[in-house]
Amino acid sequence: MMNVISARAHGILDYGTVAGFSLIPTIFKLAGTPAYLCYALAVIHLLMTILTRFPSGVVPVIPVAVHKTVEAVVGPVLVLSPWILGFSAEKIARNVFISAGVLIFAVWLLSEYHIERRLAAQE
Image 1 (tube, one colour):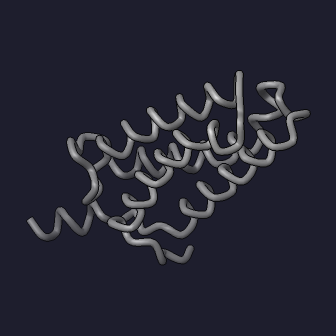
Image 2 (cartoon, rainbow, N blue to C red):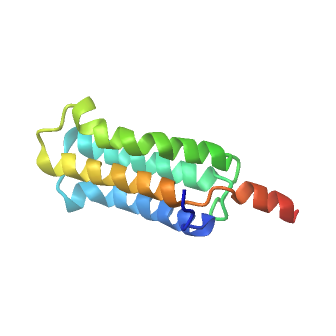
């Protein structure tokens, strides 16, 4: 795996993801389940980012390994969510969630998740 996204950059991308999920319903005029899912994902992603032991974490209590695992699962689940949650006929919503899932999975693939070992070595 190529680790081209540093832990610091990953944190910045995480906060950008929160902003993105918060704005997607307005930008793409989503309603109902897709909109509620975006808002829920924004809150959950914000909490995960604030609580993860990354440089961008505010109250770093969640191990990076947990954050990494959540992202590894969330990416593919977002791609499948239009069919799982029954909004696959809504073309814009479907494409937004497929794109978000692919992006989250790509960030997962490209991120450097060994920050905890590096931080422990510096102590």
